[in-house]
Length: 75
Length: 251
Image (cartoon, rainbow over all chains, first blue to last red; front, side, top):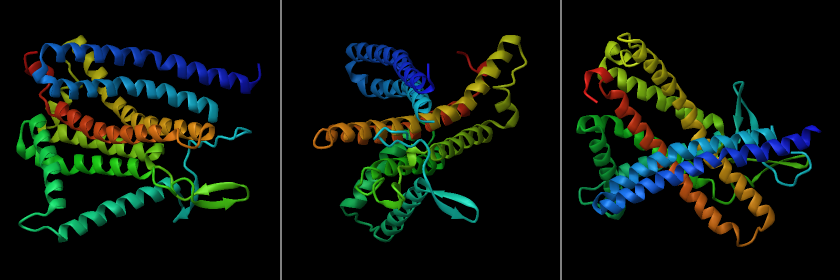
């Protein structure tokens, strides 16, 4: 297998599999936040800002996977 | 790169050297952001009146609510006033850098070197040097804030904890995760902006006419959120660093 096709496959795999985990994680965080808001609509401001914070942590790992895939293809 | 028509660069192109240090186009654009921010600050300073006009009222409102939020998180007005310049500067700097990159001319106006275009301006947050520098500044501020609040021995007792083997390992893990914040801060900002830039380039290569507009809107939103997140995370980590070590409080 030549280097170019290996790079393409590596980039696709890194991006695709890498964002699988964070996507599920963000969904779970959103689920927890929605349930908490449903139980206590008055605290929705605090819950929403904490949710954004947790989502940012999970998203950072997904972004790491995307950056790795770009490095594979373009460097 | 190779024969693809989509031109994506991971490293900002170098424009020249100044006293032996390379000057890249993203450095040029971050200087532009600094000049714009400080110019606006100097201009605004001269127009402050006792009975405020619209601009002064809105800026006072934004700064006041940010200061209140920081005071609420840090639980002390004095500490909030001490850290407010740092957090607000980080937020405004990243915000302006992220919003300015959508102006026409950034990335397209440049010098021709043979057949390749060398852009004069390049989004600073899409350069890892910029985000790494900001991450270092935030990291040192967090550590020094913790050291100043707790004193050297109490602060290092959080990481070098010799009371029991488990606590020792936990201390080491906490120390490593503190240093890991450098990576996470820089790569979060860099990855978000860079991935957005590549997405926009790809969409513009396929459907250049009306389709990119909602995506550009989305990227502006992401840029604002990332600036907010950087400042908020620094705030939370400062609060965490100033808390007493684990054994001293009941969990």
